[in-house]
Image 1 (cartoon, rainbow, N blue to C red):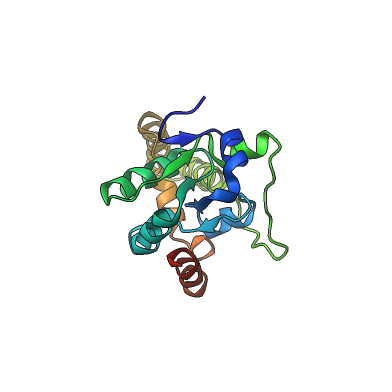
Image 2 (image 1 turned 60 degrees about the vertical axis):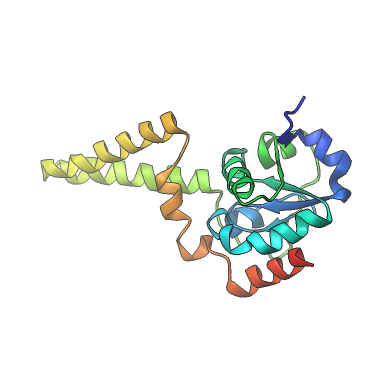
Length: 188
């Protein structure tokens, strides 16, 4: 069962043709697999897309999705602040795929990793570097301690500063032409 602000994957699948689906993950994550017909508007570009999203919401129901539901909940809140009605997908694309629903993977998909995997690699590498360099320079161990503290804070607050930083890397950024085409398609 879903709340008023969200749809379960089964509910969304039954109504997919009537929904405008907006995936707020990074372009690299989007390319690894998304709901059929989903438009990619990364969370950090949401403000620039408000006009197009408002137009799409006026024509039909807007469904905002991400990997797990955390970023789509933030997008939902941001849209609500601007008077744009939307719902979210409970459990995100992970729940969608786990239930065996269709996931679209473009033939020429970019080969970026999911954000969670990028965070694990970066965090693990920084901790390892801090420990290795710390064998010669004790102060370098503070790097490992800082990353560990950041991970604890991330878990407690259900946010991720490292993911926000990694989202700004070139392979996680939308090409301007792709974002412009998406906004034009949403704007109708």
